[in-house]
Image 1 (cartoon, rainbow, N blue to C red):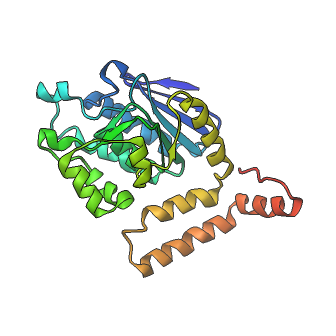
Image 2: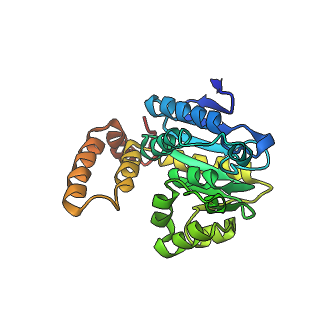
Image 3: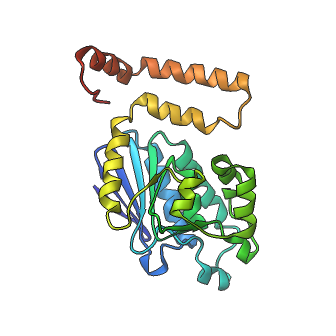
Length: 256
């Protein structure tokens, strides 16, 4: 099943939903209407209990070049832009499905923010990424909140304040991305990674995602209480029974 919005598409294949940003003529830059599309589609994906994994890619030469600077220069980007954008980012973080982004070409500004809101970031070595909002004298969204969680406060302040770009190899070195794939074979390698994550994609894995999101926000007692609740859910889910059966039968598990 494929659904086309004006500025992106979503194709659902069983438990996998593939979201593609589709403004290649603008390097998938985000303006208000594209942001509204992303807000709407993340809500649909969040509510779809059959979706277990979401991939995010960019059509053409870039993943996403961030906010549309032509629209900004024309005065068409104002405070209306930011609430739907941040709703979309938070849904990616909190939805039940595992979210994996393939970042190629330019992954700057909002492009990097999409990656930061994803669970797993896959990049090509040549991808250029950074939070460049400072060049237009505004804040790089909740990249100000997320980036330090991945690369530490010092590196995050440097990237946020200077707005400089780094490539995929440097991003891997500092822990900003999780996998590096070759520019020429990125699609094939991305598919292989999707298979790896689907093989691990039990309800327990998705509940682990949910717990990890709060790792820096809750104190010990609150985190312990949440963990025990999530662990109970994992033990009561059919995937836990399937894991035990697979162990007894010496075979890979087949998750529900």
